[in-house]
Length: 323
Image (tube, rainbow, N blue to C red; front, side):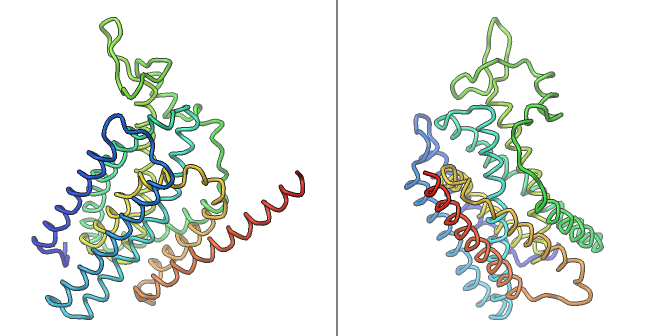
């Protein structure tokens, strides 16, 4: 697999991830700490975004000296584009987590433990999926067309999908897990497993964790091919993906109280997936430059947020008139 990543770059990235995970999981995620407040979540979200921008700047600086300014510009923009795409798609993942915690009545103070393991699992699973995808692309370049068609289909499906968590308990996987796991009726503090009368029981919190990990795999199937549309370099794909994932826990607590005010976001994400899918399908006819892709994705997100603000204002005025 051809990559700009050198042993020094891979080592530096691994060290950054390890240090930030230690800070996030050992300090912010230690036992006894309750859920993040909105202020704390906003602060940590800014830390993660700032760190990602500093990494992009460092990547540009390093490549300017080793590979030339043109390569540095292209790869730094590819990183930023992939990061924005992944960050935007991760919001939809966060909404699914909210639905899961709500359905299974997981107290806010206990959600932290699930999110800690959820982020760790996401890092491992996505690393495996990214290297597998990179290998497949080097062996079968036509697989990009399959990715493109899949993203096009997913974007259209997302725009028309209805969100309803009322029948979550009737999902085949939930029914299968409940039927095959010896499970307690109630959540047992932060425990995933408890022992009763000499027998090991899974708790509903374990079921939630399985569903959280599964939801991340499902969303990774969308987001990883989307970044491959920007670049097939495994170093850029992995770094942009993992930097977005590292801030997921803070993003969750930031959006937990205002999720209902982002009703239009899924339509913006759907348009982004359709654009990226179309970009992959026409790659042999016309290659859309990375700066253009970044501008389109950022423009769609900005327009979506502006429309969302307008819709929220209309709804607020309507509620005020009713009162």
